[in-house]
Amino acid sequence: MTQLGQLAKVLRSKNSGPFELTLDVLFDSEDRYRMVKDSGLITKKTVSELYGITEEQIHHLVFFDQALGFKITFARDISSGTVGDRDVYGAQQHAPLMVLDVGPMKEE
Image 1 (cartoon, rainbow, N blue to C red):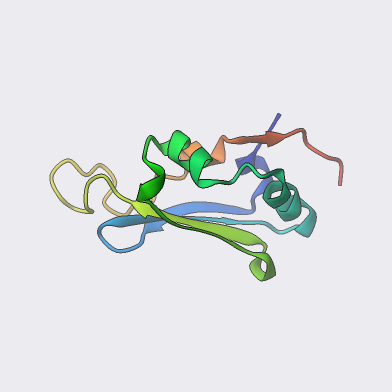
Image 2 (cartoon, rainbow, N blue to C red; image 1 turned 120 degrees about the vertical axis):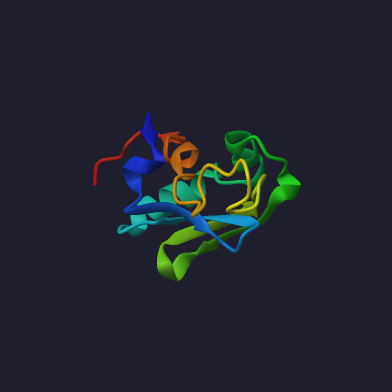
């Protein structure tokens, strides 16, 4: 199986203010982007399962065809910089999405 991290050129996370995290996934190939988008795997249900959150915590899940990418924004369990926050910048939260199986690798 192929993991999303193997297909994406950029897969990162960051704060979207102190109360939200944003995941950005960008591709350098339209074929790879379409393969992931058309798979139907990138849904609020999938993201909520990967991150152990409710679908209601996901504020945005948007595909940008012109940029060959998509963005997911969801509520943080703990606001950035407060006691118990282990990632003040939100820069280490992309790993669950990175290992998502998206299907067999196609030859390019």
